[in-house]
Structure formats: structure tokens, C-alpha cells
Amino acid sequence: MVRLSVNVNKIATLRNSRTRQAGPTSRGYPSVVEGTRACIEAGATGITVHPRPDARHITLTDVRELADLLAPLRDQVEYNIEGDPRPELMDLVEAVRPHQVTLVPVRPGEITSQAGWPADTPMGPMRSLIERMHEASVRVSVFVDPEPAPIDWAAELGADRVELFTEPFAIAYARSEAEGRRSYETYVRAAEHAHARGLGLNAGHDLDAENLTLFGGLPHLDEVSIGHAIIADALFEGLAATIRKYLDALP
Image (cartoon, rainbow, N blue to C red):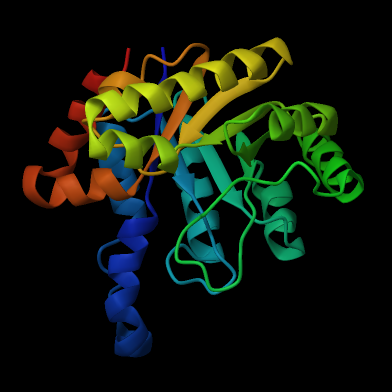
């Protein structure tokens, strides 16, 4: 069964659009904790957060509060913290010990992730970091493009999984189903290659209820991380109904 990990960043974005102006008396509404609880009650079996250095959505405090919420549910709901391998974030990951950390490259000024790690990224620091996370019993996924070279790089690092960057597929699918299917075949080859290298397989970025009906059938797929589309759909359909819709789209 493919796990649906709901990225709750957008709940924090909405909260922060008001709290940054409201000051210390703000109610912190909508609550990321309450939003997460609603996702779990609707059937989500994973929660993802991406605390960026500028704290424009998820904050380090959110990371800790969600760790407390999810601790009693550890056998049911996986906690995935994604982000760049900056020291303060890696220290926090080591302290809260989520199920998984997803290492994502961050470009200065980007609004959202634009690409996976290039295959020529120096291995030494990343390998040491992965070893450190393994010592803390944290599974490591590495965000990569659907190509053999970065997948091989991730395998040589000692990563447990790769997360395939799915924006190219989503753009192709939005143009036409035929283009989407051609793009999908690139991901099938990448999935088979990752599996052959002993890597688990995650995927995320711009997946939605429509394109997931195709992409959810990707061979060896363990987990999809979806945030923007779920929260956008929830504006019209309600959060619980949206979570159930996405779960129904997965095999």
C-alpha cells in the first residue's frame, strides 16, 4: 500500500499571513497541530513538514509540537521532516527522531523546490550526515530527479530511499494525458533503477488527485508527499473529504 504523507506547510503559510502582523497576542490560527490532527482522523498515515531557514511557513517550534502530537501514534503515522542539511535543522531532527528525514537542496530565493540533488554533489559531508541520522534511527530519503546518475549517487551515499521530483510529470500531464504517460515512463525507468540499487521509493511535488490516478501505480512506490493540491482542494471540498479522495486514488 502506498503511504499518503500530507505536507502541512500550507496550513502554516495561512497562519503566518496573519500572525506576522498580529504580534504576540495572535491566536496562531489556523493551528498546524489541529490541521494535522484532522488529516490523521481522515485517514492520512504520514505527515510531512519542510521548515525553511526563513520560517515562512513551518517553524522549528512547529516541528517540535508535531513531534509531541505524533509520538503516541508512532506505529500508525510516519513523521517526515524534509529540508536542506543545515546544522540547526539536522540537530532538531536528531533530537525529535522522526521516522524519516528527506534531504532537499535549497536554492537562494526559491519559492518551492526546483530540482533534486545533482549527481556531482560532494559525497563526503552528505555521507557523514546520513551516518549520523542512521545512528539516531532515522531513515534517510534524498530528493532527486528521475535519472540514473543522481539515483546512483544516492545509493552510494548510503541513503535508504530516494524521493523523485515529480514536477516535470505534473506539467506534462497538465498539457495532455498522452504527454503525461510519456513522462510517466521516465519515472517507471527511474523507479526500476532505484529498486535495483536497493533504494526505497518516494515521490512528490505537484502531484494531485487527477494525475495521481496514473502516478500512484508507479512500480515499487512506497510513499507520496502531497501538500499544495490537498490544501487547495480542501478549500472547496473540506479537508477530511479531500484526504479520503486522495487515499482512494492510491492503490
